[in-house]
Image (cartoon, rainbow, N blue to C red; front, top):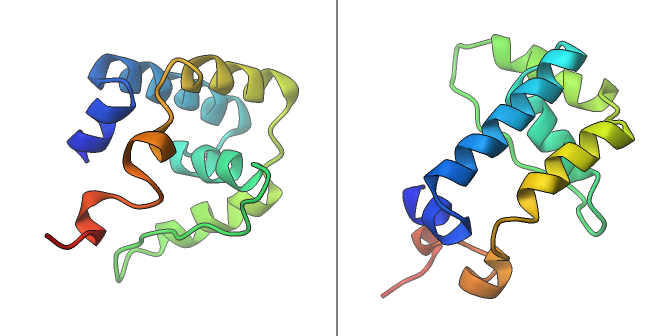
Amino acid sequence: MMQMVDAWGGWSLFQVLLQTLKRVASKHGVSIPTVAVRYILDQQAVGGSMIGVRLGLSDHIKDANAIFSLALDVEDISSILEVTQKGKDLMKIIGDCGDEYRRA
């Protein structure tokens, strides 16, 4: 995870992104992961997202369902873009998957 954060823009910029996502999440009464997944699903050419959950924790069901009713407005998208555009393009740096999927 830290390799991805460092490659993207570093810990400080990642914290700014988390703070931005928290503000948007609080505004809509949802979680940070819900905002993050909705934002990604709204991107052109994205058809789906994988959501990790832990067995026995039903709280995740409510979060996952909230993704489909959340609509990010222009202000939300602009505030997220303001931060993400400061980061590097990970597709250019590492490609379409992380190191954990590569074989030596």
